[in-house]
Image 1 (tube, one colour):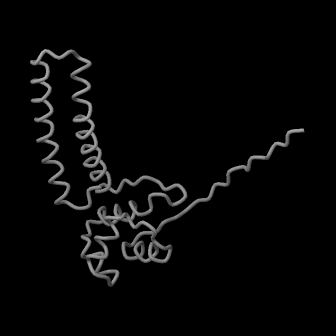
Image 2: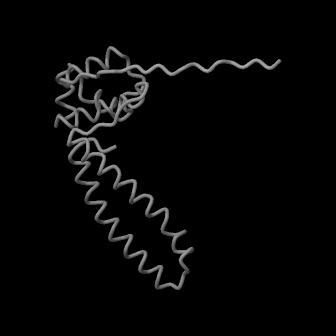
Image 3: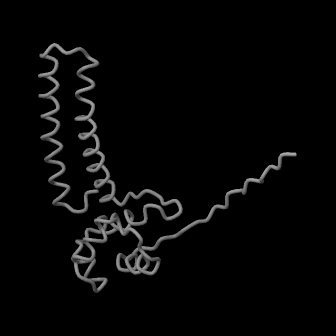
Length: 149
């Protein structure tokens, strides 16, 4: 996950480099006399890395626009907290100051995507970010047990 503008700019630059490298590699493979299947087998892992990097860049751009994915059973809460900070243009240092903790704590928490965060800590971070998390509960029907006779 891209967490700041510096990482974003670095990723965009890497994307450009990777695209040129992909095209060059493909041209060399085609010139080597390999058939389509062989070229595909060689290129798939390289393309996969490129696509993953593109998804990270696109994801960061969505976050900067304030577009967030929903949560189901609070899965992804840590990523949402990181995304909220990014969308608001706050640095980790600024969030740390608002929470009264050291910047290294925020860096460590974000690197781990707030794994194991308590409800109280999540609430404090949301308050520091000026955000509210509103939940909606949908009850799924329970499956009845069947008894074989």
